[in-house]
Image 1: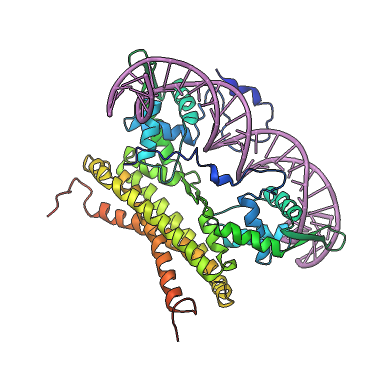
Image 2: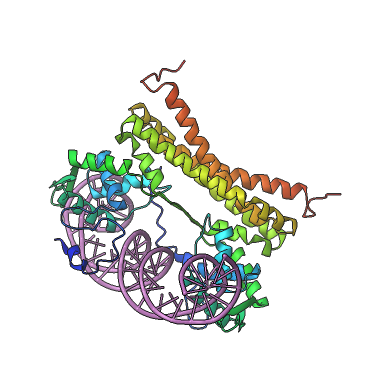
Length: 209
Length: 209
DNA sequence: TTCGTCATGTAAGAAGTTACATGATTTC
DNA sequence: GAAATCATGTAACTTCTTACATGACGAA
């Protein structure tokens, strides 16, 4: 069933339309930056902060991507930037334009492929864990579970903030936060379930009935 | 042969073990290849197939990584390779060695960081979805849910195979498969829950008093 | 004064993907 | 005899991360 590796090579809609000189081609990181400006982030620095507090669970971004993106968005007319130094320290603050909001909405509506890309060496190790002694495999499984449990603590700590945002009319940040919580809760549950089963009858006691 | 030695001029960036001729430096993709050979994959081609059928949910690999890894593992003595052409078509088949099994187990035991790296533009869009009209946001949410539901169908189709592997004494492939199923089930549930709330609560299309 | 935070940027490189190249074998 | 699959590989490219550079401001 899985043998047929879906060839994504022909469908390069992921990169969007051809980046011509007329089209200011905005890539995914650019839209993230645009979206964060739209939510009220003012400087590149604040974007980095906000990403770390909100979508960190399923997206990361670095200054090296942010600052060029901001210039590109300004060129395209999606944001306006003006210098607003803090004392003698240089600083650019940005605001989203109407064209920017339109571009953001258009991107959000666009039905381009949204691959769910998970890259997890922990699960890879768990997959191969039958090569270990039973006790070692249990240790590994516990480590995976604890990793999810720790992440749950972190995510739940952000819930009050997300609730406040929801109360102001934006429920979707809370929705994606719940998604992160649900995912790690599910992983921890599967781990726990397996751990309990192993504890119950590990010595070839597999007879059902 | 050992072309990596050339760049050892800079000494101050020693964050890990130096890849020298004594240490056969094996990176993550190398261990994945080693593990798959350990599970019975014989050629680079078969490794690619097996990855696509088993750990595709949380790891991918391409031929460009596989073939160099195989040569490297053979040099390190972790696998043995011999030519076994199909007719006139060249072909190398590999087997894991005892040293290879030991290296694999050591890697599995190693308590190095196992970051859970999720990269999902779908969730990013969902996070920003308050910029859309309510109806459009619902469409996006439905798309996210359907994506998980489709993935569930694919994953459940592999369950019989994983059960067969478990019956032969290797329960961990089934465990990681269940993990994938649980993750997407949780995401679909969160979506469905939110969709129901939206339909019932605020003044959308529903006739709420 | 020194440390932590704010704020922006450059240069280099690690990692992985895609496109392309090659050609044999099996299947329809 | 055409298409799909088996099987391996090279070269170019994108993407993202790391390390480094710069320096102002505020607080201890």
